Image (tube, rainbow, N blue to C red; front, top):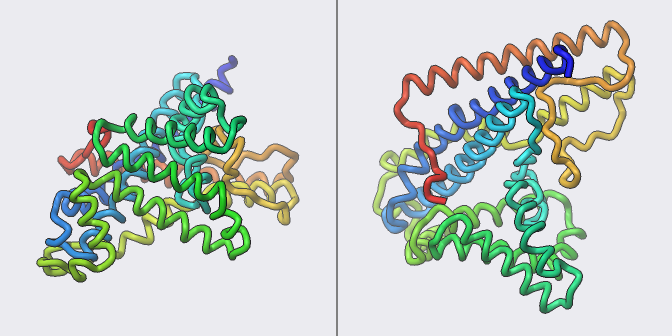
Length: 330
Protein backbone atom coordinates (compact mmCIF):
# COMPACT_ATOMS: atom_id res chain seq x y z
CA UNK A 1 0.00 0.00 0.00
CA UNK A 2 1.40 3.39 -0.97
CA UNK A 3 1.61 6.32 1.42
CA UNK A 4 -1.31 8.24 -0.15
CA UNK A 5 -3.98 5.49 0.22
CA UNK A 6 -2.68 4.70 3.71
CA UNK A 7 -3.08 8.29 4.87
CA UNK A 8 -6.41 8.55 3.07
CA UNK A 9 -7.66 5.54 5.01
CA UNK A 10 -6.31 7.03 8.24
CA UNK A 11 -8.17 10.28 7.57
CA UNK A 12 -11.40 8.45 6.78
CA UNK A 13 -11.08 6.45 9.98
CA UNK A 14 -10.41 9.59 12.02
CA UNK A 15 -13.53 11.25 10.61
CA UNK A 16 -15.66 8.21 11.43
CA UNK A 17 -14.19 8.10 14.93
CA UNK A 18 -15.24 11.73 15.46
CA UNK A 19 -18.77 10.92 14.27
CA UNK A 20 -18.99 8.02 16.72
CA UNK A 21 -17.54 10.04 19.58
CA UNK A 22 -20.11 12.77 19.02
CA UNK A 23 -22.95 10.23 18.95
CA UNK A 24 -21.82 8.69 22.21
CA UNK A 25 -20.81 11.74 24.23
CA UNK A 26 -23.03 14.53 22.93
CA UNK A 27 -26.22 12.60 22.10
CA UNK A 28 -26.33 9.26 23.92
CA UNK A 29 -25.07 10.59 27.25
CA UNK A 30 -27.54 13.49 27.10
CA UNK A 31 -30.48 11.15 26.47
CA UNK A 32 -29.10 8.78 29.11
CA UNK A 33 -29.45 11.33 31.92
CA UNK A 34 -33.24 11.36 31.48
CA UNK A 35 -33.47 7.60 30.87
CA UNK A 36 -31.46 6.77 34.01
CA UNK A 37 -33.61 9.08 36.13
CA UNK A 38 -36.91 7.51 35.02
CA UNK A 39 -36.39 3.83 34.15
CA UNK A 40 -35.68 2.64 37.73
CA UNK A 41 -38.88 4.22 39.06
CA UNK A 42 -42.33 2.69 39.51
CA UNK A 43 -44.81 3.26 36.69
CA UNK A 44 -47.50 4.34 39.16
CA UNK A 45 -45.15 7.03 40.43
CA UNK A 46 -44.38 8.68 37.09
CA UNK A 47 -47.48 7.95 34.99
CA UNK A 48 -47.78 8.10 31.22
CA UNK A 49 -45.51 11.11 30.67
CA UNK A 50 -42.72 9.69 32.83
CA UNK A 51 -42.88 6.20 31.29
CA UNK A 52 -43.13 7.51 27.74
CA UNK A 53 -40.25 9.93 28.31
CA UNK A 54 -38.09 7.24 29.90
CA UNK A 55 -38.53 4.77 27.04
CA UNK A 56 -38.15 7.50 24.41
CA UNK A 57 -34.90 8.67 26.01
CA UNK A 58 -33.64 5.08 26.18
CA UNK A 59 -34.60 4.58 22.52
CA UNK A 60 -32.27 7.39 21.50
CA UNK A 61 -29.62 6.53 24.08
CA UNK A 62 -29.13 2.92 23.02
CA UNK A 63 -28.98 3.81 19.32
CA UNK A 64 -26.51 6.67 19.62
CA UNK A 65 -24.49 4.81 22.25
CA UNK A 66 -24.19 1.52 20.39
CA UNK A 67 -23.82 2.96 16.90
CA UNK A 68 -21.37 5.52 18.29
CA UNK A 69 -19.17 2.80 19.80
CA UNK A 70 -19.39 0.87 16.53
CA UNK A 71 -18.35 3.91 14.49
CA UNK A 72 -15.43 4.57 16.83
CA UNK A 73 -14.26 0.95 16.60
CA UNK A 74 -14.58 0.83 12.81
CA UNK A 75 -12.84 4.21 12.55
CA UNK A 76 -9.94 3.06 14.73
CA UNK A 77 -9.65 -0.05 12.57
CA UNK A 78 -9.47 2.05 9.40
CA UNK A 79 -6.83 4.24 11.00
CA UNK A 80 -4.70 1.11 11.52
CA UNK A 81 -5.40 -0.32 8.07
CA UNK A 82 -8.23 -2.75 8.90
CA UNK A 83 -11.58 -2.77 7.13
CA UNK A 84 -14.70 -3.76 9.08
CA UNK A 85 -18.31 -3.80 7.85
CA UNK A 86 -20.80 -1.28 9.18
CA UNK A 87 -22.94 -2.31 12.12
CA UNK A 88 -25.83 0.18 11.88
CA UNK A 89 -27.63 1.49 8.81
CA UNK A 90 -30.16 4.06 10.06
CA UNK A 91 -32.48 1.49 11.67
CA UNK A 92 -34.99 4.05 12.93
CA UNK A 93 -35.96 4.85 9.33
CA UNK A 94 -37.21 1.29 8.78
CA UNK A 95 -40.72 0.42 7.63
CA UNK A 96 -41.00 -3.07 9.15
CA UNK A 97 -39.53 -5.30 11.84
CA UNK A 98 -37.74 -7.30 9.15
CA UNK A 99 -36.10 -4.19 7.72
CA UNK A 100 -35.27 -2.93 11.21
CA UNK A 101 -33.17 -6.04 11.86
CA UNK A 102 -31.42 -5.69 8.53
CA UNK A 103 -30.27 -2.27 9.71
CA UNK A 104 -29.76 -2.75 13.49
CA UNK A 105 -26.70 -4.54 14.92
CA UNK A 106 -25.97 -6.06 11.52
CA UNK A 107 -23.04 -8.14 12.74
CA UNK A 108 -25.22 -9.91 15.33
CA UNK A 109 -27.95 -10.57 12.78
CA UNK A 110 -25.40 -11.98 10.35
CA UNK A 111 -23.94 -14.24 13.05
CA UNK A 112 -27.29 -15.79 14.00
CA UNK A 113 -28.27 -16.11 10.34
CA UNK A 114 -25.06 -17.92 9.34
CA UNK A 115 -24.49 -20.07 12.44
CA UNK A 116 -28.00 -20.79 13.75
CA UNK A 117 -30.78 -20.03 11.26
CA UNK A 118 -29.21 -21.53 8.11
CA UNK A 119 -27.89 -24.68 9.86
CA UNK A 120 -31.43 -25.24 11.18
CA UNK A 121 -32.67 -25.22 7.59
CA UNK A 122 -33.55 -21.55 7.22
CA UNK A 123 -36.67 -21.01 5.16
CA UNK A 124 -36.11 -24.08 2.95
CA UNK A 125 -38.32 -26.16 5.21
CA UNK A 126 -41.99 -26.71 5.94
CA UNK A 127 -44.00 -23.81 7.35
CA UNK A 128 -44.19 -25.25 10.90
CA UNK A 129 -40.42 -25.85 10.90
CA UNK A 130 -39.82 -22.35 9.53
CA UNK A 131 -41.84 -20.90 12.41
CA UNK A 132 -39.89 -23.03 14.89
CA UNK A 133 -36.53 -22.03 13.37
CA UNK A 134 -37.45 -18.36 13.56
CA UNK A 135 -38.54 -18.55 17.19
CA UNK A 136 -35.41 -20.51 18.16
CA UNK A 137 -33.19 -17.84 16.57
CA UNK A 138 -35.02 -14.98 18.26
CA UNK A 139 -35.20 -16.75 21.60
CA UNK A 140 -31.42 -17.22 21.46
CA UNK A 141 -30.98 -13.61 20.36
CA UNK A 142 -32.83 -12.50 23.49
CA UNK A 143 -30.85 -14.78 25.80
CA UNK A 144 -27.61 -13.62 24.15
CA UNK A 145 -28.26 -10.18 25.64
CA UNK A 146 -28.65 -11.49 29.18
CA UNK A 147 -30.01 -14.23 31.42
CA UNK A 148 -33.23 -12.45 32.34
CA UNK A 149 -36.84 -13.04 31.44
CA UNK A 150 -37.28 -9.62 29.90
CA UNK A 151 -34.48 -10.31 27.39
CA UNK A 152 -36.04 -13.65 26.41
CA UNK A 153 -39.43 -12.00 26.10
CA UNK A 154 -37.85 -9.24 24.00
CA UNK A 155 -36.36 -11.78 21.61
CA UNK A 156 -39.59 -13.74 21.27
CA UNK A 157 -41.48 -10.47 20.77
CA UNK A 158 -39.39 -9.72 17.68
CA UNK A 159 -39.72 -13.30 16.44
CA UNK A 160 -43.52 -13.13 16.60
CA UNK A 161 -43.57 -9.76 14.86
CA UNK A 162 -41.32 -10.91 12.02
CA UNK A 163 -43.49 -14.01 11.49
CA UNK A 164 -46.64 -11.89 11.56
CA UNK A 165 -45.16 -9.61 8.90
CA UNK A 166 -44.10 -12.59 6.82
CA UNK A 167 -47.56 -14.15 6.76
CA UNK A 168 -49.99 -11.25 6.63
CA UNK A 169 -49.00 -7.83 8.02
CA UNK A 170 -46.81 -6.77 5.10
CA UNK A 171 -49.59 -7.64 2.67
CA UNK A 172 -51.67 -4.99 4.40
CA UNK A 173 -48.90 -2.42 4.85
CA UNK A 174 -47.85 -2.64 1.20
CA UNK A 175 -51.27 -1.28 0.23
CA UNK A 176 -51.04 1.70 2.57
CA UNK A 177 -49.02 4.94 2.34
CA UNK A 178 -45.35 4.60 3.34
CA UNK A 179 -45.72 6.79 6.42
CA UNK A 180 -48.07 4.17 7.91
CA UNK A 181 -45.30 1.57 7.64
CA UNK A 182 -42.87 3.97 9.34
CA UNK A 183 -45.32 4.55 12.20
CA UNK A 184 -45.84 0.79 12.50
CA UNK A 185 -42.10 0.21 12.88
CA UNK A 186 -41.65 3.10 15.34
CA UNK A 187 -44.35 1.62 17.57
CA UNK A 188 -42.69 -1.81 17.33
CA UNK A 189 -39.21 -0.76 18.37
CA UNK A 190 -40.54 1.67 20.99
CA UNK A 191 -42.37 -1.09 22.87
CA UNK A 192 -39.47 -3.44 22.14
CA UNK A 193 -37.12 -1.12 24.01
CA UNK A 194 -39.61 -0.99 26.87
CA UNK A 195 -39.23 -4.77 27.20
CA UNK A 196 -35.48 -4.43 26.94
CA UNK A 197 -34.93 -1.56 29.36
CA UNK A 198 -37.38 -2.28 32.18
CA UNK A 199 -36.28 -5.15 34.40
CA UNK A 200 -38.70 -7.61 35.99
CA UNK A 201 -41.82 -8.94 34.28
CA UNK A 202 -44.03 -7.31 36.90
CA UNK A 203 -42.49 -3.92 36.21
CA UNK A 204 -42.78 -4.48 32.47
CA UNK A 205 -46.51 -5.13 32.85
CA UNK A 206 -46.96 -1.99 34.92
CA UNK A 207 -45.07 0.13 32.39
CA UNK A 208 -47.21 -1.26 29.57
CA UNK A 209 -50.33 -0.34 31.53
CA UNK A 210 -48.94 3.14 32.17
CA UNK A 211 -48.48 3.63 28.42
CA UNK A 212 -52.23 3.26 28.07
CA UNK A 213 -53.15 5.65 30.88
CA UNK A 214 -53.51 3.28 33.83
CA UNK A 215 -51.75 5.70 36.22
CA UNK A 216 -52.80 9.00 34.69
CA UNK A 217 -50.60 11.55 33.00
CA UNK A 218 -48.11 12.07 35.84
CA UNK A 219 -48.77 9.34 38.41
CA UNK A 220 -47.96 10.75 41.82
CA UNK A 221 -45.29 13.14 40.46
CA UNK A 222 -45.38 16.68 39.17
CA UNK A 223 -44.21 17.71 35.74
CA UNK A 224 -41.34 19.60 37.35
CA UNK A 225 -40.17 16.48 39.23
CA UNK A 226 -40.14 14.36 36.07
CA UNK A 227 -37.87 16.87 34.24
CA UNK A 228 -39.17 15.60 30.90
CA UNK A 229 -40.07 19.12 29.82
CA UNK A 230 -36.42 20.19 29.88
CA UNK A 231 -35.58 17.73 27.09
CA UNK A 232 -38.28 18.79 24.63
CA UNK A 233 -35.93 21.15 22.81
CA UNK A 234 -33.44 18.28 22.28
CA UNK A 235 -35.94 15.92 20.65
CA UNK A 236 -35.53 17.45 17.14
CA UNK A 237 -31.76 17.00 17.44
CA UNK A 238 -32.15 13.35 18.40
CA UNK A 239 -34.60 12.76 15.55
CA UNK A 240 -32.40 14.49 12.97
CA UNK A 241 -29.41 12.48 14.20
CA UNK A 242 -31.36 9.27 13.54
CA UNK A 243 -32.37 10.13 9.98
CA UNK A 244 -30.45 9.46 6.79
CA UNK A 245 -30.10 13.05 5.62
CA UNK A 246 -26.29 12.84 5.61
CA UNK A 247 -25.91 10.03 3.04
CA UNK A 248 -28.73 11.54 0.96
CA UNK A 249 -27.02 14.94 0.89
CA UNK A 250 -23.62 13.41 0.17
CA UNK A 251 -24.98 11.41 -2.78
CA UNK A 252 -26.99 14.39 -4.03
CA UNK A 253 -23.89 16.62 -4.07
CA UNK A 254 -21.95 13.84 -5.81
CA UNK A 255 -24.65 13.52 -8.50
CA UNK A 256 -24.64 17.30 -9.02
CA UNK A 257 -20.85 17.42 -9.26
CA UNK A 258 -20.83 14.62 -11.83
CA UNK A 259 -23.41 16.43 -13.97
CA UNK A 260 -26.40 14.23 -13.16
CA UNK A 261 -28.49 16.24 -10.66
CA UNK A 262 -31.66 14.24 -11.40
CA UNK A 263 -30.08 10.90 -10.56
CA UNK A 264 -32.33 8.69 -8.42
CA UNK A 265 -30.89 8.65 -4.91
CA UNK A 266 -31.22 5.72 -2.50
CA UNK A 267 -29.59 7.16 0.58
CA UNK A 268 -29.09 3.96 2.60
CA UNK A 269 -30.22 0.72 0.90
CA UNK A 270 -31.31 -1.94 3.37
CA UNK A 271 -29.65 -4.80 1.46
CA UNK A 272 -26.05 -5.26 0.28
CA UNK A 273 -24.99 -2.13 2.11
CA UNK A 274 -22.33 -3.30 4.54
CA UNK A 275 -19.56 -0.99 3.36
CA UNK A 276 -18.80 1.90 5.68
CA UNK A 277 -19.70 5.13 3.85
CA UNK A 278 -17.18 7.96 3.67
CA UNK A 279 -17.72 11.07 5.77
CA UNK A 280 -17.03 13.21 2.71
CA UNK A 281 -18.32 13.66 -0.83
CA UNK A 282 -16.37 11.29 -3.06
CA UNK A 283 -16.88 11.65 -6.81
CA UNK A 284 -16.35 8.62 -9.05
CA UNK A 285 -16.68 10.21 -12.48
CA UNK A 286 -15.15 13.25 -14.17
CA UNK A 287 -15.98 16.56 -12.47
CA UNK A 288 -15.62 20.05 -13.99
CA UNK A 289 -13.06 22.26 -12.25
CA UNK A 290 -15.64 24.67 -10.81
CA UNK A 291 -17.73 21.93 -9.31
CA UNK A 292 -14.63 20.16 -8.02
CA UNK A 293 -13.75 23.29 -6.07
CA UNK A 294 -17.29 23.39 -4.65
CA UNK A 295 -16.99 19.74 -3.55
CA UNK A 296 -13.64 20.52 -1.92
CA UNK A 297 -15.24 23.42 -0.03
CA UNK A 298 -18.06 21.15 1.19
CA UNK A 299 -15.54 18.57 2.38
CA UNK A 300 -13.51 21.20 4.22
CA UNK A 301 -16.66 22.45 5.96
CA UNK A 302 -17.48 18.85 6.92
CA UNK A 303 -14.00 18.43 8.43
CA UNK A 304 -14.37 21.69 10.37
CA UNK A 305 -17.72 20.47 11.72
CA UNK A 306 -16.18 17.13 12.76
CA UNK A 307 -13.31 18.97 14.45
CA UNK A 308 -15.89 20.99 16.41
CA UNK A 309 -17.68 17.75 17.37
CA UNK A 310 -14.38 16.27 18.58
CA UNK A 311 -13.53 19.34 20.67
CA UNK A 312 -17.01 19.56 22.19
CA UNK A 313 -16.94 15.84 22.97
CA UNK A 314 -13.57 16.13 24.72
CA UNK A 315 -14.80 19.12 26.71
CA UNK A 316 -17.90 17.16 27.74
CA UNK A 317 -15.87 14.14 28.85
CA UNK A 318 -13.49 16.30 30.88
CA UNK A 319 -16.18 18.40 32.52
CA UNK A 320 -18.65 15.63 33.37
CA UNK A 321 -18.37 12.49 35.46
CA UNK A 322 -21.43 10.97 33.76
CA UNK A 323 -20.30 8.58 31.04
CA UNK A 324 -22.42 5.41 31.31
CA UNK A 325 -21.42 2.10 29.77
CA UNK A 326 -24.78 0.40 29.27
CA UNK A 327 -23.46 -2.89 27.88
CA UNK A 328 -22.16 -4.36 31.12
CA UNK A 329 -25.64 -5.84 31.66
CA UNK A 330 -25.75 -7.68 28.31
